[in-house]
Length: 182
Image (tube, rainbow, N blue to C red; front, side, top):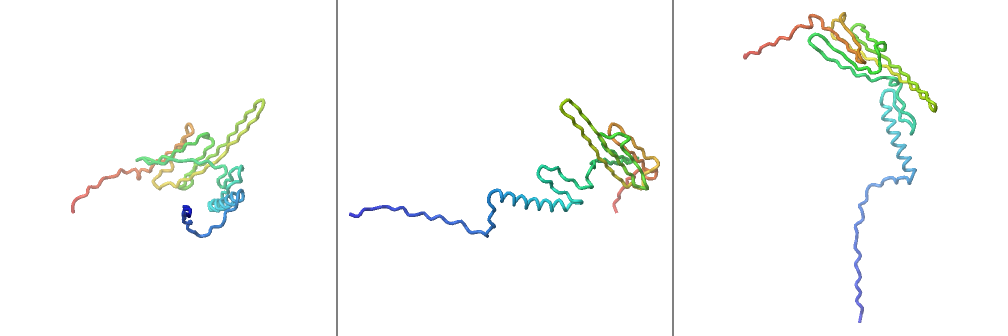
């Protein structure tokens, strides 16, 4: 009698679809270094497109700022208008009145300042000295309606406030004009 043996039929698994051949990735640490270097080159090209260039530092090195940005302070100015004047104010923490200069040349109002600060700590087992410095300069083109002989500036608790009065002819009140049916 013939023995009956059951054989399992092999199950066919579809092969994955072939895609466009990609370059084989380098193995191990070489892959990381190659990828990181490529990324670095792309980032350098991106930052080079900014004025003056702004290169990424090597790992552990400080960020290299472009020359035009070294020692600058970012100051925000608030400008508003009232019926009688234009008002300009700026918060200047760490600066004193003597550190700020306001000038008017023609119709160009310029506000500039410089901050210099040093701190020194000496203890038995350490010595720390820090220096902070920076400057800012901002100019505003004034409208013809400003009476430049009456501009006033005040400085109180780190806030610069400028008042630029409007000339008398500029203060005329607005008049509402009624609209009638045609």
